[in-house]
Amino acid sequence: MPMYATTRIHDGLAFGESPRWREGRLWFSDFYRHGVFSVAPDGSDERLAYEVPGQPSGLAWLPDGDQLYVSMTDHLVVRVGPSGTAVHADISPYCGFWANDLTTGASGVAYVGNFGFDLDDVVERSGFEGLFAAPPPTTNLVVLAPDGSVRQVVPDLSFPNGAVITPDGSTLIIAETLAGRLTAFTVAEDGTLHDRRVWATLEFAAPDGICLDAEGQVWFANAATNACQRVREGGEVTATATTTQTAFACALGGDDGSSLYVMTAPTSSRFHAADTRFAAIESVRVDVPGAARP
Image 1 (tube, helix red, strand yellow):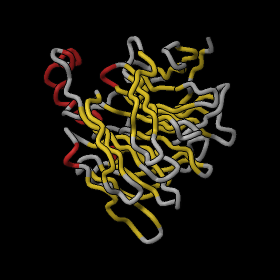
Image 2: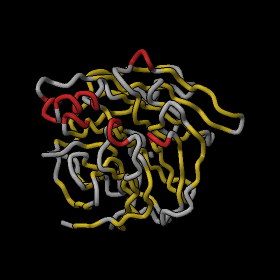
Image 3: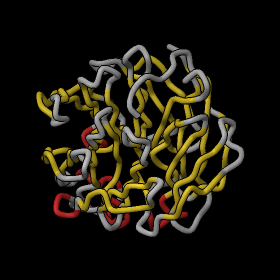
Image 4: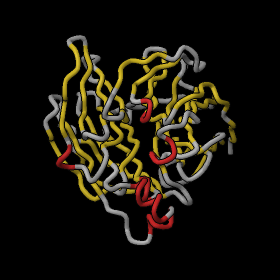
């Protein structure tokens, strides 16, 4: 089984999320620096794209090139384009706590998750054991039409997190962080989700951000440890990339799609990360390039 070790290519983040490779640069959100940024492939030349007072998370693009981002604390999906910035959707009625990750299909249908409950508060008061003293609350995945209207609400997901859509557009795979699994849905022509099924059950893992490679395997950032792992459908781990800190999100990019970028940090807790700058972007070359949305 291939074993990789990442190296740090960019330091000074508070908490990086939602890495996306686009037009020769790695884009990402930083929760507690309240901005969307991009860097060059080697981690240099950091640029602030725009500030997000409501704390940014998921990033995606629409077919016309406009960008979407999730504004976490006010539960908004915001659209950014040549004509300016506007609210694309308000998903607050469907959120148990902060809005979180985001992906879009080729038609512009968007999929947005949320925490479901105040994870940081539970862990601060009771430790990680407190998360499982009783079953954690489940929450919704919201499916947005290209115009931002709510097309579907998919219930009963356990901390829905990173998501990818297969290149043929037929399947969405999403990480359920607190259930330790990757879940798949069939994507209908209108973008709605059906035929829910377990894609992979993961042992000793809290899958956070994910990306898909050209062999149909998923890399997931394991928020329970300092590693990203590659897994095939059914749950067999086929590669591991160790990181210097806890791994929270990952993306495949670079000119040939074979650079694995990982967002790492000592912690995701707002009580401990918000005023620090210890998070980083790490990277390593892998054997199989990326192929998916995002």
